[in-house]
Image (tube, rainbow, N blue to C red; front, side, top):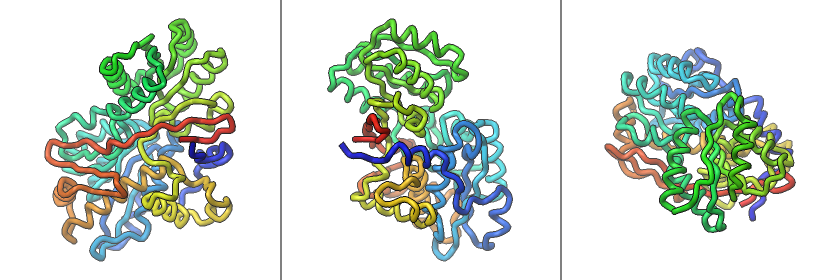
Length: 387
């Protein structure tokens, strides 16, 4: 197995402060050249999902630092939505009014779904919603371009791996939010396809009010494996409760749930399997990862110099996703005319495939699926992610 990152480094990366070059709302355009290409993003830079939002932004900023397209500098305006869909929609409206050419995706299904009416009315393309929600892939929206694998591909990989381990009796613990409901539907579909046995399927309230009841009911079903699809902090509480009861069933979590989970689990995380939808950000043998790591080191040289290689607290799956999405958007802009514009950007995104070190994206009219890549990692006793 590949040892990825120490628990101490996970704790450091979860904080992720301070972000290099974070532009405060309303200042980016005043400080940029008149011919700058304007991009925007709405992310949870505060609130429960702040660590994920900040990491996504750090990766995007690293990808776009010093970037230009046909002589025009690229400027990214970031607005905080605190993980609230209505704020995300307002942010997108404000960015559209400011004349952005395109948006990078927000975090989570609810916020990205809230952006769709804005994208349609403003005819504004969005690249890389940070969610596997199939609702964004199944809709007939010309303006949303998913990058990461959807829940369907992720669920298939996760359940196939459990099947290979002869773990057929599955307990599904899914939150009653947009991501949880979407993940649940795809997991149930894949369980049926693989002829596995759903031992029990339980809905976990986002407030956590029924956590004890759900844990008790799941234990009574005596599953061989438990799959959790819930917000990170809530999932950590459930897994700690499950671990504290001494149950031996394997625990696996979806990629959205696993983001930022290890530092919250401590010793209770031993053996927990985490689904990932991007390659390991610590495997520098891959050219794409080497480029990402170089960009992150350049973005935060004080952090890079403080931690000896190869253990770097600034690397992580979320910042790699932010970096990757920004790279795709930048390459699409480079394909279009110097004047740029929203329609030419869509045409470029729907054009020839994008191949970033073997990770291939091919969109077209009516085709809005992203990558198919997914893999599993496991937490060890000392807090290391292993493959």
